[in-house]
Structures are given as C-alpha cells and as structure tokens.
Image (cartoon, rainbow over all chains, first blue to last red; front, top):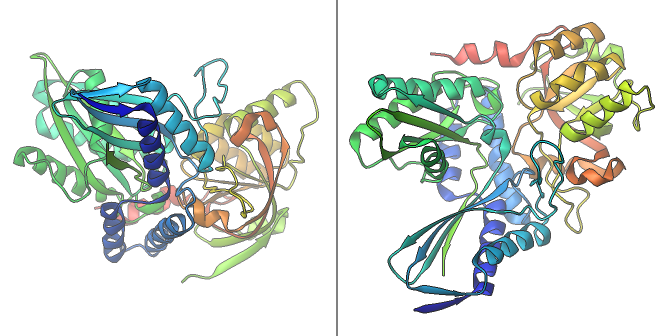
Length: 280
Length: 184
C-alpha cells in the first residue's frame, strides 16, 4: 500500500480550486479566440473580446474569473493501493474551505435549500464523486460550477424510439429555452443512458471534456456535430445579444441503460468553463 | 467601436426617455447591489409598511453577489447574476421609482410591463467578465443585511461601468430583436 496523508490531499484540493478559479484552460481560451474571428455580430465580437480580456486580467492578477465561484465539485479516481492516513472527506473539504477563504473566492453554499438558506461561509460541503480504480495514485478533476448555467440544465426520460434525432432536438431545445441566461457561449455536456442519477453526473463530467475533442464513437461524434450546428443556428450569440457563437462545443457521453428507457441529461456550462486536474 | 453614451446616476426621466435598446452606455455614480435574499427582505418590509434601508426613487440596482475584496482592491470580481430570479419582486420596486436595473438574462412580461408603465431601463452587463467589471467599481460599502454575506446590499461608486441598454422604457428588447437576425 502507498501511504498518502490527509494533509497532501487538502493541499492538492486547495491548489486545484485556486488554479481553476483564476486560470481558464487553453482549449476554452483558443476556442473563444477562434469564435471571435468567425462571429458576424459586432456586439458578439465585442462580448468575445471582453471575455478574452477578462481571462487575461484574472490569470495575471490571480482574482476570480467570475464572481460565481460555484459549488465545489470533485471527480476523483482513487487507486485501490492507496492508504489514506486521516479522514478522506474532511481533508477534501478543508482544501475547499482554505481555497475559498484564502483565495478571496465567493462562498455560495447554503445549508437548507428551502427554509434557512444559511450561508455555510466555507463553500462546503464539497460534492465528491469517487471511483475506485487499479493503481496507487489519486487523480483529481475539480470544477467550481456556477449556477447561472446549472439552473438551465435539463433531464428527459425519452423513449428508445426517439432515437438520435430526438436526442439532438432535446439538446437544442434546452439551449434555446436557456437563451441568454447561462452566459453563452456555453459548453454543453450530455449523457444518454444510465439512470436519472447516473445520466446527471455523467453529463456534468462531460462538460469537462476538452473543447475540440469528439466522442471516439463516430455515431455519437456525428450527434455532437449536428447539435452544435443547430445550436449555433439559433442566433442567440455571445451574452444572448445575437450572433452565431451560442455554444463552443457539445460533448455527448453514453452509459448502458434499461431495455425500457433512454434518459438524456443536458448540463450547461458557461464560457467561464473552469476546471483543473492533478495527481498525487 | 460604437459610440458610448455616458450617463450619471440617479437617472432622470429625460435620460431614461433618451436611452434606446442596443445603445452602449457607461454609468458613473452611486448604484446599489441586491439579489435574491435582499430583494425578499425589501419586499417583506414593504408589505409590513416599514421604511426601506435604501432610497429606491431614481436609483439603479445591480444584481450581483461579489467575490470578497482581495487586499489592494476596491472590490472583488463582480459580474451580473441572472435577473429572472428577481422578477417576482421587481414591479413593486419599479412602482417606488426604481429607474434602472443591471443584470443578465431574460425578464418576465410583468417586469417589462411595469418598466413601460413606470419608465425604467434594464441594462445588460456581460456575465462572466467579472474581473474586468470590478475595475470600474471605485468604492464599496455594505449598507444593509451584512449577515447575508455576498448577498448583502452594497453601495458602489462606479466610474464608466460598461453596459448595454437591453430593454428600454418603451419595451424594446434586444433579447427579442437581435437573435432572429442571426437565426438560420
């Protein structure tokens, strides 16, 4: 067994959330640059150039790209040959708390969703998904998820007969209903299959796949291309003020499902598509 | 680059009437912040017939919950939040003379009708460009509901705050007029 201390986990989680909130990934940055060359709306071009300037200021000055620094979500692959010295969940939450307090990031988590809505003042609890995998490493993929885009996400329990066309239409309809609200240009994460819960989690994870990479299965890649084209033909544009850049990319993932169903979850991520990864 | 119209707060009826959907505007002066929780409290006070902690008449409310202010800064990152969550509370504030709202995203029919009736403007700030927007905020103080943290009502002094007239006092709405021009 490889020994990993809780403190190492805390430090890694802290580092990743600070990095994710200040620095946008190269793939998203390049895709906005490309879009600004192709955008035909003058307002749209101005919005894209403001977005690029904002990424630059945030990274240089180490301040939050967006004030909505989100709920803290982690996808972790825990090697089965790792032994954690200390409390796993507590270490992760301490890392989140320190990042959000020391890094001047907004604390957005509230305790009870209906009655108290009291701010926890730490941005905890983190939302943690852990897969146990072979090996002796811990791989982290973290994302601060803002709620402007999260609120525009949808789930449908479709019929198998709806087929690829039905799925693409549901994705496009979701983006259309969202309009300007989720801060376009967006990245659209989709999962087809599984159950309501598995589809939702997998769709969220799909928003984190690299912009520019398609699903390796050609049939799903074709659906991604069709959905993106239809979305960008909606005319919503940057900030919803008109234009041909409504989404930067569509990532569709799939899971085995039941003979009677075809769940489709669509998770929308704003242009501040923040995530970071690291290994212990 | 299109021409930028400079305006000062508080907003007069003459300024309001002169603002047209699609115009780029820079705002200078004092504005108030407020989002879900603060709006809820303001409306509860109104229902109880009590005095509000801010003067609403002629003012502008910015829908924002800023990030904490790092050392050496006047304000942390402070981009707009999605406005529709404030829709249920907005007509009552417009009836009190609220003249401007800064946010992002769609508004309800009731809000647009109340804006037309009362003569008010909905300005769009660009969501997610929060670090850049923070540069135009020159001072910030909490004036009510400190317990709400980022949702407290702040008073900002802003200089050349960049916005676009999204819905004007006649009800012209960029979210309705612009996308069809690019639809295929």
